[in-house]
Image 1: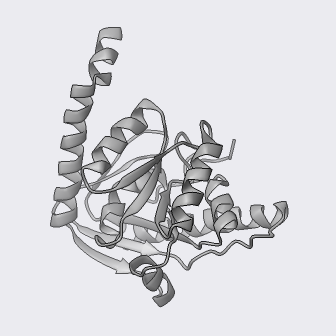
Image 2: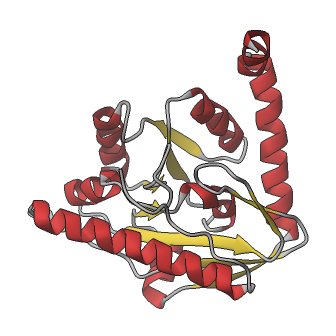
Length: 234
């Protein structure tokens, strides 16, 4: 067991796995026929020049490669855990930069890094239920980043007609090639810089409800069973 763990944590093996993962994501992105559903306000934000905070559930992260304008780099918050290192290596091969940190470890450092990026006009991607859940229950990191910077939050999700749902904590959704795909963006969420704790909690709840609503819509779009949120937040 220990030998197996050391093998998979070796730099060479992780680089190989990252290359395979990046190649797969690129292949899926090219072979899936994508449709995007969004309001004019969301489209202008997603494809425009203004900074925003993209929020998507951890289990839908592989769909997000199709969601961004290739001319517009996005920085994704990734856990400093070993799994996060592997994800960072994979998405770096797709031209996506990362910010290390999470709500559990290095959270304040990550928040400061995101604040700097956003204030410089860069967009940031966050999985508000990451890195370990509860599934589809939003934490407050993205809300605090929006409050500090005045940058809007864009809830966004994706799905494909052919997919594999894993039994992991996030019910990870693996899109399969040669499918039909859907990207859905909800209206932006704005957080006042002088919001008190009650208002911050209201915004967090709005984000969670919005993301769950569009994820349910994306599942129903292809007539698939819905991936449900975890029963309770911990």
